Length: 266
Image (tube, rainbow, N blue to C red):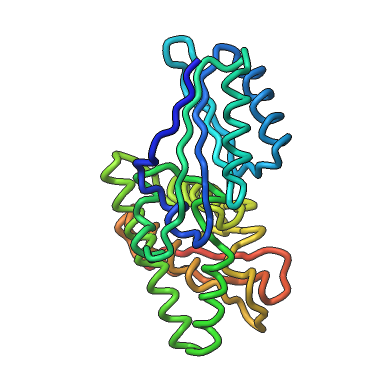
C-alpha cells in the first residue's frame, strides 16, 4: 500500500476563491468500487470531515478511481489520521491526497476561466453566497447603472464560456442544445438548479428553482440581471444570433422560481 501526499499542482478555481479555507482532494484506487467508497466515507465521517463532492472515473488497469473533495479547514491533523486509516483498509489499493490553501489575493474574475479548464465542483468551485452579496451591494448603490453593469458582466462571462466550448470542440444544436448545456453548467457550478426549459411559440422559457443571484436581495421586481446577461451571451456566443432575455418572475420578488423568457431578435 502506498500513501502519498503531493503538493497540489493544479490551480482549480474554488481553491483560489475561498478566503481562509483549506481543501483536500482524495484520489483512491480500488478494485471493488462500492465497498471501497463506503469504507472511505465511513472513515471520513468518523473524523468529522465535511465532504463537498464525491465522484468517480473510468477504470485504469482494473482499478477504478474514487475522487473526493473535502473541506478540512482547522482539522488537517484529523484529516491526516483519516487518510492513514483509509490506507490500511484492504478495500483500497492505493490512495493519494492533495491539500490546497485558498489564496485570497486572486480575484474572482481572474479565476473564473479555470472553471472550464479545470474540474467543475459545485459547492467548492462557486462561492455563490459571497458573489451574490457583492451583486446586491452593486444593485443597491448604483441603481439602474448597477443593473446594466451586472447584465454586461454576465453577458461577457456567457460569451467567454461559449468561446471556450468551441475551443474544446463542444457543439450545441440550436437554442434547445445551448440551453440544455446552460442547465448543466448552472447546476454544476453551484448557481442553482434549472427546474425546466421548454419552448413556447417563438420563445423559450427557463425556470430556475434556487438561482444564486436572487439569494441576497429582496426587491419589488425581478433582479437577476447577471443571469439574464449570462444566458444572452451564452446563446449569442454559440449561435451567432442576437437574443432578448427577460426575467418574468424572481425569487427576490417573492415568486417561487425565477422565470426567464428567451426570444431571438428578428
